[in-house]
Image (cartoon, rainbow, N blue to C red; front, side, top):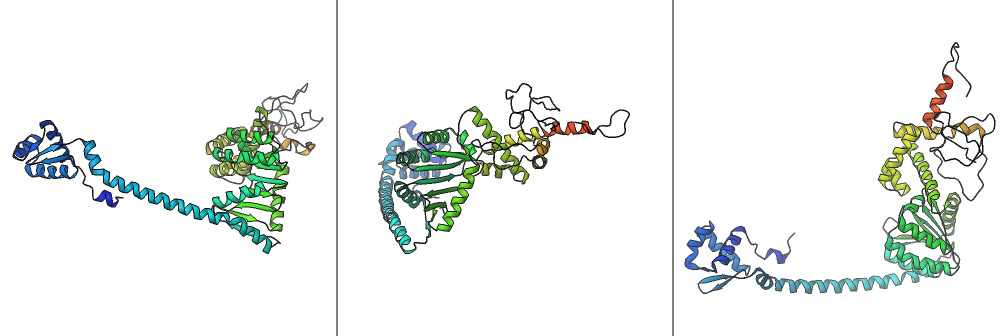
Length: 425
């Protein structure tokens, strides 16, 4: 799209460039030499006259009596563009001044937000729900609320990683909060453990006294301060400010339910391995529901590439030939639970009646037992969930659906000389 300034500025064409080069070589052009210039450049005399006029308009040629002299492009550009450039600079200064004035007025309205909310709270002591229109208002009010926090901040954040700029901005504020003795509990997604910047940020907060746990899925975004004020995202890009007691109570119940199921944030190879297995379990649950890879990746806060890699590994582990079959096998074997075990709690005793149906997705390493159980299908070591040998008569477990299917077919195979199916393990 051309501006008014661009529309009034002549464009140099090919004929003008050819004649300009000829004039530089010949040291200029006299009116009487136009026929020779036309013959040597391959242009007509009329084209040469048009080119001379164009070069003059663009300041590349300077008239001198009955002749024309070529000048340097730098000098021509400075002469031709100095006026428009000065006008543009003046226009930019005007725009900058107007932008600063608009921002000053916006800040004045933003500064009135606490006054508005305090008056609303006084007028409606039973509680209100207010809408903060944009991120400027949200950040200003959140900073003030956090600075005045007395006892507790609860945070739920969706996503496998957070912007480094946002983490740098939040870290001093959160550390100051913890230094005042305020309790801080944050729920992240499992995928954050594999993002270096988010992991470093979480370790710093944990070192200062914060509590951070992770789940496969969490609420998109929620902040509750002192159990009296909640922030929820709005589709307009701002936030909903919640003071209504019943709604706040509901949000607190949801947060504490997720907190009980969440796993404390930890680092190290074993912690990463355990979380990776939990992520795979969540993928199985979502596969069983018929979700596509992009939807699964978005819900779990992982990249689409990582999600597809996990799905491929799960298909192999389950002996499945399609996503639908993998979901069906996982559902049948009880592998689609949405939450992992609680590390801080004692695990419940396994149900012997379900032992043969609860085959793990991957085979764990040995646990130090004198004689570990081995998979009847492939012979790999396979301890039970609590690390002990199974009780006598307990049905054998298998490392995968494929091994379990082979063992089942072996039991069903007729014995030589008999017509019935074998029933022993």
